[in-house]
Length: 281
Image 1: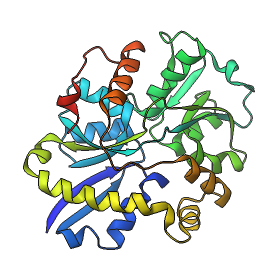
Image 2: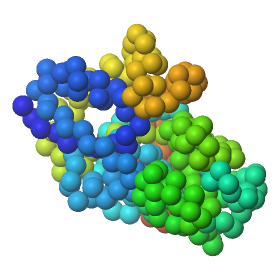
Image 3: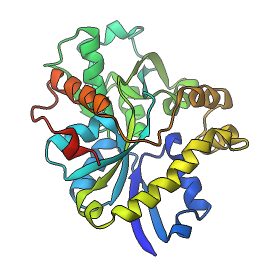
Image 4: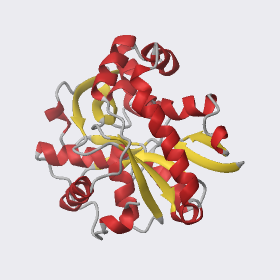
């Protein structure tokens, strides 16, 4: 049995992996897949890939493209979620800010530098026509810490996935002022290069397994109720999210790769360009 370590955020997008593990589907292929939740998100996962602390990661597209351009020895082995990620723009319930325009120049809570919450705050600021040179960031690591930071006035707003944050909004802890979707496919499956070089056959078998599950995921009986219960999200919100979400069973296209990289260049987030053939399996 080949042991494989994989990491990802503890969010509803990754339920197909947990189902495959629980059903013993990877074991049937001789793969002992060990999943670890990383609530700190993409920045932390990039660090773990660099440090050989994981073999695989399910990770945000913009974060991994940026980190590979900065020397992360990893390869995109497949697109995982092709649809954009909906980033909610949140303030504390008692915040004086009532519309997105009020947030110009305000302090932004982020999980880590290089994370999605960091990069998308810059994407959003650019979209709004704000100066991105003097953005103020407050590192909070996790959603729970973001709740504390905004509630206690240590930061002013926080961008996180719309539906995972909605329970916090429904409880009257956050208010959501708007959404900012990613202008690219949201999640990639990435391999550490040292693992990839020795295990290409194993990776192909693993991808066949997860792709079969994601292709049929929306047809699983009562999957909406399973998701709602597991992730503490209202059933109607889960149904809306499932209608918006498209898992992928193909590789990231060169067109989408170039679009991501060019936007990161335009935003001043990367300076070293990388080739599609060197970055994508």
